[in-house]
Length: 371
Image (cartoon, rainbow, N blue to C red; front, side):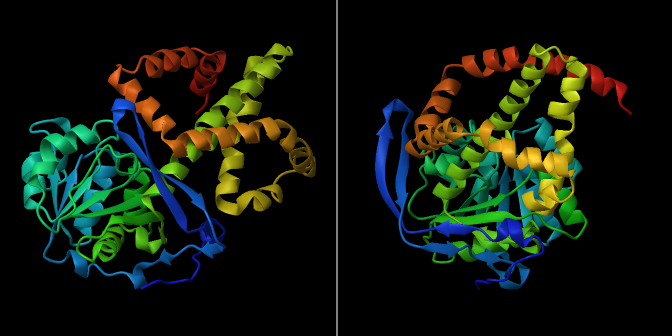
């Protein structure tokens, strides 16, 4: 079943995972957050990567997959599975926007409890913050012995916000990109890489079912990396906070402010610190860091290799380690859960404050000028 081949973008999939996780449990307050704290032992091991040739849709034959939630990911999963020949039903709020959209897409729609009751595989694709309530109120009492409970992100399982019964499989197939891209690539005969994990294997076939699901959404065309719920959750949160969202946006604002405070025009600072970022990110995405450097000027490359470490120095690296510790310990999860319970005061106030930054005003004006 396991294939060790590398794919066409081998540089991004030749991941080295340090294995052998040793777990202990910790509980945090009345949020119910329980995490598996782990340290890593042993030697590096190449990731297991599965492709279409290593999978089969057979484990889903004669089964019904319920997609709970019909948003960005839910719609893509449902349509891709349906087009792969899998029997799919959608669970949604009756007469809501998702209900009508699924109907317009030609898929059978049921209220969530009925969809969960009638399905063999129940894929939880609602937003993380509402998923525990949806599960408790509509799904938990409608699970049957041997069902597979599927997730696209490990947050609620890893941090114990959802506690499945012992007589079901608990799996994850996590596409590494937005649902719209998952769908468009599938329609073009391509695929989006994904992660696959099994948290609970009651039937003994949980991995086979998860891989069949991954093949059904088209991920096997690109490569499916085997991981754990803990690893997916912790690395996903870390990447969002340190690089993709938090780190990137703060770096942009800080650089923009530095130029403006030094007397440079905000419009020029915007182009240099934000607008042109797309060009570099696209090169890194397709060619890797070294490949990007081969495609920029020698002056830019020299500035990169001699100045970058002064921006991301030891203090930044220590901050990254502290953020990772907060994620691993469950501290961030507890904070986010309490934030939601309190009505999201920081989320809304800080989001509003940052949306009023000068870089946003300048950006809106410049984007309006562009074709």
